[in-house]
Length: 249
Image (cartoon, rainbow, N blue to C red; front, side, top):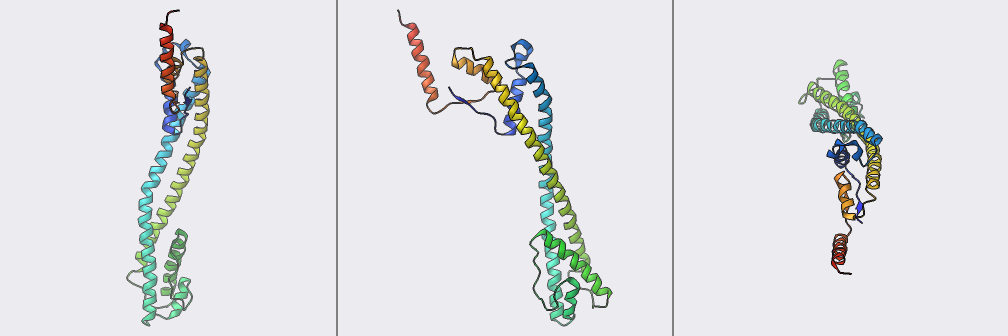
């Protein structure tokens, strides 16, 4: 006897439930191979499960769309912040600004190394330091503004990144929440399918012909998988039975 293969994807779960619910034999309620109570539970559950899957996919799509924008804003923010600090170092090296100017940006006076801008938190931290530091320095007579890039351009790109970062975090939270909801419904779907298939098999258990019994169950969505050589063995058995029936006794 082949073994049952329970669905392992959401599409397969929905197909298994819909196949049983939408079967044409529902025209006669007495022909149902499973309980009416189970049918009503599945009819109530299925739309909610499908809606949860749709919402989860929509949340992932929005996150993916924003990810491309977010990646570009991250790249440009990193570029402008690092270029600004490089130009600051060049300006100090040329003697146009004193080394003490670095302290306005949260950098040691004699530290010529660029800070790490690898993580989002690095960008958020150093973008804020650069913008605040440039404003403080120029306001307190610490020399002329740095140009190419100007702090205005740095600020525009930093704010774009900051907004995209906040949006991405929100999209990630929405996606995680929707995925968790689908996972919860998925467990319920598996329980319904298991109960459904058990009831269907029990309904047809009295049929003597194994193949007919299996076909009846498959008609309501059950999926069977044959082990290696099992189909051939069933064929040989049926052929032997056919020959036996023809023999005169």
